[in-house]
Length: 284
Image (cartoon, rainbow, N blue to C red; front, side, top):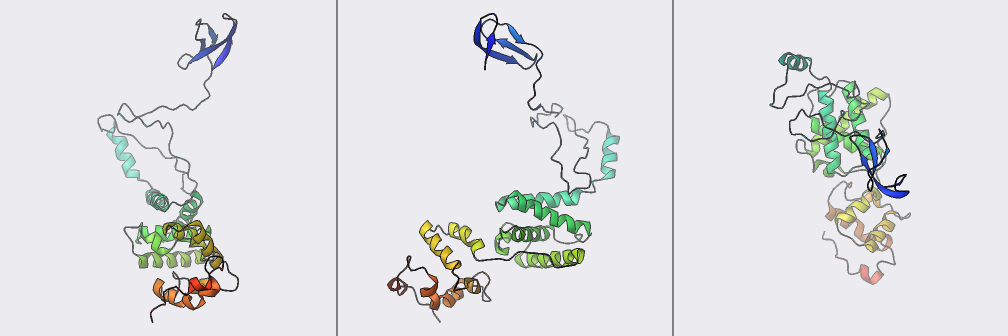
């Protein structure tokens, strides 16, 4: 940074001394400005010389879903692992943390959402749904991971970014697909009692999964465009044959259902009639 030096009679490079708050000319050493106020963030550590160099000087971000907004006081341990005054540690352990269970649930939601690459709005919506269940005192004795996974499933649908139960189940270690489905039905039932009406879940369309599935299959842009036109075709409702929601739930059977309609659903610019004849005939 350059500044005008009255001794050098020209603009010179200056050095800022953070400890003293002085702005000093790098050429003649004249103090151009003294006791300046540093308005940048004051990052420093309060780790009691324990070797932890985490520059946090405050607690975590305020969470409005917690009773005390997450503004709790924790008695830290000393450098040798001791907790200082043992009486203070006993009092803290005796008091316990009333929000411990819901904090664990929020952390689980955050971890699952990160593994699914979900946006923050979905993560917040899932946390809000779980908080409403916790307020009804109906989560005790139930599988936490199944409830959390179901909250994420519902939040995805409400935010218009649905994920299949199978996708969510793939990142859950402590719950099966059936348990997540039961948890989802339980949540819908409980929140219906709370609101007095059915909870809005959002409508699922085939196009909601299209780009993600096409990307996973490594399809080209031309192929993706053809699939999009097929899904959006007004004269043929492909959702009726959607292989993820058909009554038989297999790609093989879905292909057999779609095969007779190939000429109608596949765009002409992508595949001519002679190309369609080369399609494999489904086995009976």
